[in-house]
Amino acid sequence: MNSILHRWLAGLCAVLAMSGAASPARAQAQGGPAELRIAYPVDIPSWDPTSVTFPAGQSIYKTVFDSPLHMGDGSKVEPALIREWRWIDQSAQKLQVVLQENAVFHDGTPVTAEDLEFTFDRARASKQIALGAMMPTVAGIEVQGPKTAVISFSKPTPAAPKFLAFLSAYILPKAYFERVGPQGFLEKPVGAGPYRVVEYQRGSRIVLEAFDRYWRGVAPIRRVTIEIVTDPSARVAALESGRVDVALQVPVREINRLARVPGLSASVYPYDEIYILQMPSYTPEFRDLPVRRAMQLAIDKKGLSRAFYAGVAEPISVLASKGSPGDVPGFELPFSREQAIEELAKAGYGPDKPLAIKLFSTNGTFPSDYEMARAIAQMWTRVGITTTVEEVTVAKYLELSHSSKLTGVMLYSWANATADPENFAGRILDPRLRFSTWKAPELADRIDALVVETDEAKRMEGYRALNRSASENAWSLPVLQAVSTIAHKKNLNVVTHKTGYVLAREFSWK
Image (cartoon, rainbow, N blue to C red; front, top):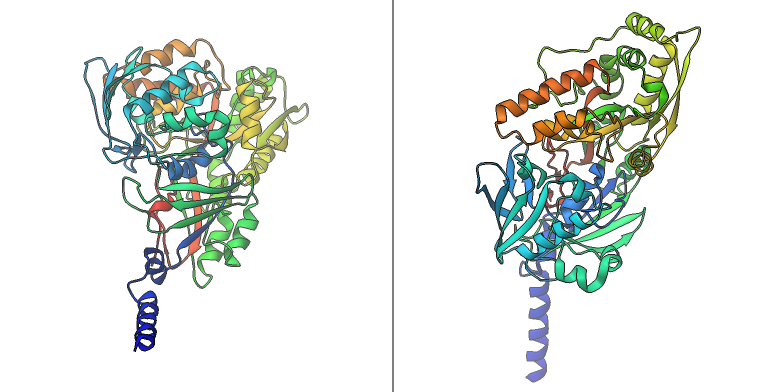
């Protein structure tokens, strides 16, 4: 009898193991794979998310670290690790914040006001940490309780909540960071995001696992593998072969074809990022206004949009995305090859006596970047500006830009999930910032006056005037509102955002 009972119990256990009473991972697999594989165009430069302003990596950073606040699609600041915030003075210099009660880091320690204080104190103490440059007016953090703090600013900073939702704004775990040190943190990063890092091979892959104690709830897909595939064609091939489930920033020319492939979906969509030509004022060729104006007039933006972005990328005439607060309705920079030649002649150059310049561009960091750069170079060459295109990585561009050693114009995609003009013209043209290339000292006072303006209508009016001046003087050349592309398996629910973020925790299998 004991033998029969033993066999019966063993059989019952086997049935239960294969039944609906399976583990959560198995139950999930029944509705779709437990893993998501993404072909991503770039690797992150560092696992310290506060140390860099790296737009292309923000979707990864937000997946591992989360943000103090989140920028929604309607340019509206939403709660994240900070659940409540309010100005407690009339001058926008004291912002009280309350953190999520149940937010914890991947090592199990709670996210506290002391972690917020530690993060900003560290940034303020080092010029090498980008968070300090992104929020330079932070004067200190007053911890009022485990989850409550007041952020003090050295001068009025009305846009502060938006920047708590933007580049480099993350909260680091004080206890863990101090225990393992900076190098230990880079080797084994710990955040408070929906996924934790379980494997990292630089330049190759990032393997993430859903964090069971994430404050929003466990992500639907338990495991995410991010394959770093820098070549756009290789990302397409990886998707078509089934090696990955999602490919980001695929060439626009491939979108229609991929959309017709059985089992695949593909789309192109605009978002709050702009393609601009960064003009270094410290390079002699670009100090001459007629030269800059000629470069501006020679660009056929509508032609670029049709050729490379299926007409979806809208031409822009100021340093702002279409319809954003800093846009200037009715103001337009014309395309005129004849006027470009006339302007260039004022500087003593033309088709018979060309000016030689360099144009730097990434290749595959954003859709059709290098192809667009080559087309712009041809447009300039036609009017008498012989242009050589040089491929450069984002990391190399930032190195040259931050050290004021850029020897040519840079085609760049400027991210601004906030859509606030302070982070368009206010940062692009601030001569004191390391990522600014047009370093005109007189612009500092003008920008400072706008940064502290607490009357929102006056602040926006001032930025629109600055944007118009920037275009009329060609301090930086606006080209197109950015577009992004994504291709994926049809049985995957994919969410995209106007902010440009693609967040793995929002994906699910159908």
